[in-house]
Length: 267
Image (cartoon, rainbow, N blue to C red; front, side, top):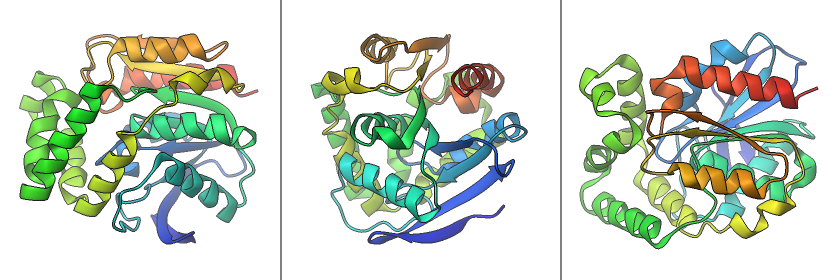
């Protein structure tokens, strides 16, 4: 199915469906500076048994990018608004990076809407280093646009070998990143700089799985361990040797972990 848009609050939000109609719904949320396309390598693995809803959150992809700053509460409200607009009472949430942050907020603040939670290469608490990292990139974007920020970020997201190889999957992520509207990137990064869910994770009651990349410099392994330790019953799978976008660079290993967790959690 092609990308569609629907009015959600003050924005037109882009979304698409894949997979099997009337199957359990997997709602997938992307990372900063990307779009629903970050999940392209997961769709074939999921599409035979699940109904897959991907969307572009505020400021990204084909969704509107109003002037910010944005907030994580706003991202949560947008996600709930999309569910309401599509008639979805609950979903099985899969989020990577910022998409995982949104998922944590939903599971804490809108628990009746999240059946299961899969958090990939994400964190629950903004550190001083993280806020500085965000501010540095915001300064570059304001001055020079998105391309130099890609150059600053690509080797944090992918291994050096993958960057040097320049595969179609690599270039697909780059294409989306450099096309991200500046207000959307600035608004979104302002939201994550205020991330503070760690002390609330014990409130999450739904089944949860965490997937981490063992060599991720953006959200290091101890961040995923902290999430696992604070959500009762959560389990952690580590994909060794990978950086932030292990789902793109190592899709087979990532998909195996993702499917195993979903099958275990969804009855």
